[in-house]
Figure 1: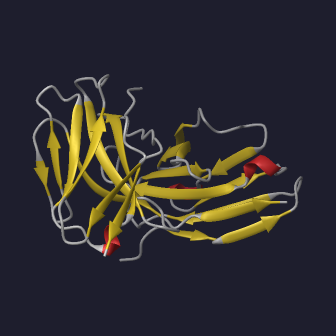
Figure 2: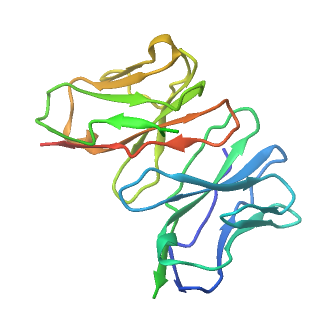
Length: 110
Length: 113
């Protein structure tokens, strides 16, 4: 299974954009890139996913590098409620087997 | 619409005792997952069901852990006997089908003393 690498922690000021990076250099052609986040004392929550093209939804944007070896989750305006651990996960089409790493702990400063 | 419901939220037991966790997935969701999350780590998949069939249980410690999903709806995860190292948060998730968004419950925090 392909692995992902994320920074352990990041900080952002409230109301500013946040770019959360993820490296996945061993990604294969059929691997989807998923992002989930986990708020304190909660289960993980789906954020966004994509395969090759950039994706946007009401929560965030996902920018995928042309070679697909890295991706970036973009929160356009961070709020205090966005403070969470963000997980970048790869899964093969048809298997939906998530292998979570340790994620990036995002701290949002008021 | 109700999300994934798990109970209990917290459980404290002595080692060597049995314990069971219950999960009610979102109505209509065919795929159900059980994960274990140790402190400071990401969740680790224990077992995945498609309807009532366990299709991936390779990470489930079968000597002491068991799971079932009756009629392809609710599911229970059991540990017997529990060990100190089993202390963790046990998360249940469901999805409409494989390769769609997974919805997680709040988890059951197990403490074995």
